[in-house]
Length: 336
Image 1: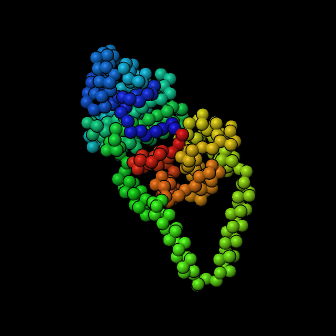
Image 2: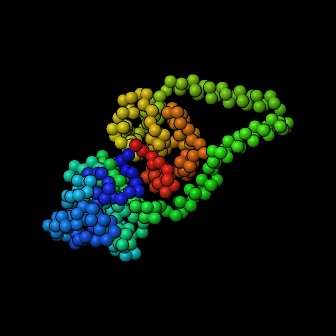
Image 3: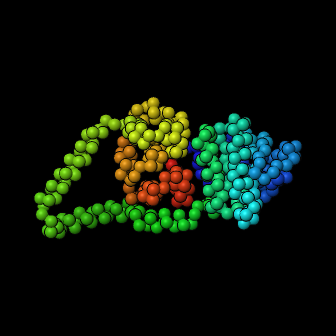
């Protein structure tokens, strides 16, 4: 997927370029900067940085990666947090912007970022994450590149506590463990067998069931031979969206989207199918209808599904914010 959040050591990322949260003197520092210097070979990397000399806050420079599995290291000094009144947000945006521009200039197809300035520079993690995702997603709307946001652990990740709590409550209210579901169903069968409901005439149940069956049957017959690809592109046309707009919003790689368009019988992974539902801003019923063409559905016995349902019910179709939440709850991310 074009933007992916991963828990990893950035020095181990096999990408074209990794980003170093540097200081303006381009000297070996602590935290991420120190780890990158040590893994690359401190003497060689320092010599390369000394040739450049310095780099201003919000700007970016590039060196070879030496012993790292990447090709380049892009060095960008982020701003030090001073309460938010010293132009910190614009400077942090500039760090991401100039790093991406430099990567594109060197024909990089993949790049890995840390959360710049959130270490010893003290930038609030939640705000830094919002800036990172905003700048990266804006860049991806215009360019094709595989971009990783690399975090070492959840403690270094900045999802809103309010959002986290709200999702957690929703999961508590709607998530049903599979074993509990099985017990509940078997128990309901026992109760139904032992004490049939007497208040409603049986013929009314038969009429309602007949209507329900005929309605579902008509829908199934009408779309019996419709593949996922056909259903997806019918929905894209109905929404008046372009192909590019759709796969960008879905966090889908252009090459995969082209494959889905050209292979009528292509069956995507569930997370990919849901990503399209989010891009198209479908409601829950519409999402289930799209998923059914690929053989999937939404269920309350899956935390992943419950989180997706939460965001759809909140009319929040920001796929990157959804992925931030999925990452926090150790669930697969949307896209492909």
